[in-house]
Amino acid sequence: MEKISEIFKSLGEKNRLRIVLLLSERPMCVCEINEVLHIALSTISSHLKNLKYAGLIKDEKEGRWIIYRLSEDHFVQDLVNKIKDTLKNDPTFLKDREKALKISRNNLSSKT
Image 1 (cartoon, helix red, strand yellow):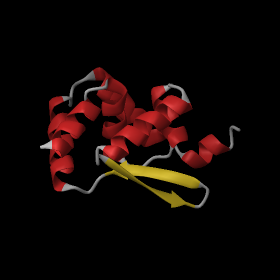
Image 2: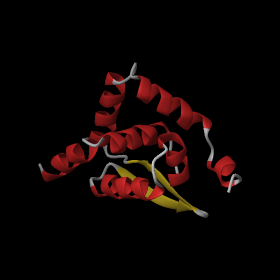
Image 3: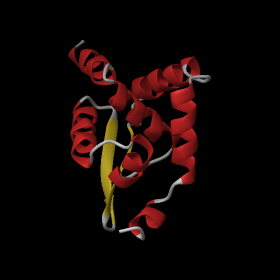
Image 4: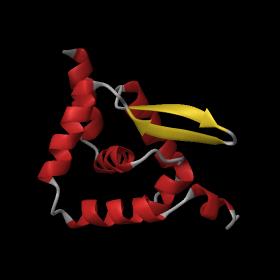
């Protein structure tokens, strides 16, 4: 019961929900998430830590990047798919999804 409670508490914050939905589309690094959400990198990192603690996401190092992806847990996958189905016409969800599918960490790193 504690794990389920942590998952729902974590998803109760709008930006964490948005991050989970982004990661359900594809794995992303912090700079890509920032490009979509336009919130402080430190805030994104805090949200990612919370989501990881709740078991919703995992991370792995790929070269110089830390890549975040949705957990492979079946409960998490099913829950996120149900949320996506519910939000399929939501303007924020659609806009975030469109941006996420267009950006690339390689292009973002050349801006700096």
